[in-house]
Image 1 (tube, rainbow, N blue to C red):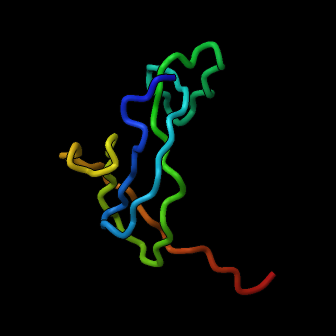
Image 2 (image 1 turned 90 degrees about the horizontal axis):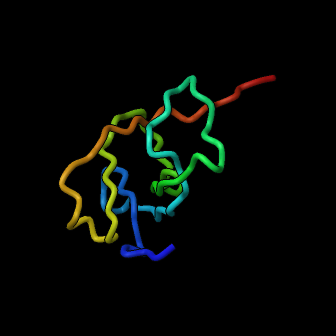
Length: 92
């Protein structure tokens, strides 16, 4: 794979919440929540996968931005991303 943009990044709201992204093979058509994952032979496109989201102790919706260059100068929009409160187990 010849990468034009070898350093993609994902920003979870703030500049101190930036993680790396990697290229993964995927299918061109988006799949729904009840659809099965595409087979290897059907994955003929490239998508970006963000590394784990940085921890956040607040339940909130933040803006998720993706940058192919890693500088976010190429990113003019965002999508909502929801953080949930961390799971706590008090007894078993």
